[in-house]
Length: 117
Image 1 (cartoon, rainbow, N blue to C red):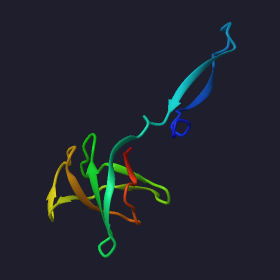
Image 2 (cartoon, rainbow, N blue to C red; image 1 turned 180 degrees about the horizontal axis):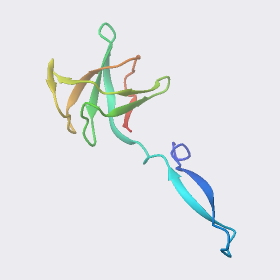
Image 3 (cartoon, rainbow, N blue to C red; image 1 turned 60 degrees about the vertical axis):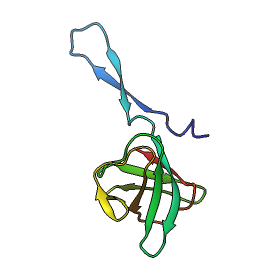
């Protein structure tokens, strides 16, 4: 489904050698970008009055400071995690199997996929 979206960009740079050398130039390949995003969970609920989403964490872990990408049929935005809560108490790390709440900058919908960048 997303196979073509996450290819790494490659930049070719030509390095010139000093005078007196036989070779005219050498091509160096530099890779740009990071690894492909990994799925960490799905949205199970959205509270519109407080603009908070509930994520069921399925893989990996989420900590404050991580950048999450919310992707769905009509949802597509990235956001940095400021705080995570379970039952109105802040936690430092969310593990698989937990349902966490966090403030989001835009509306999220049930079954939107959450990726960690």
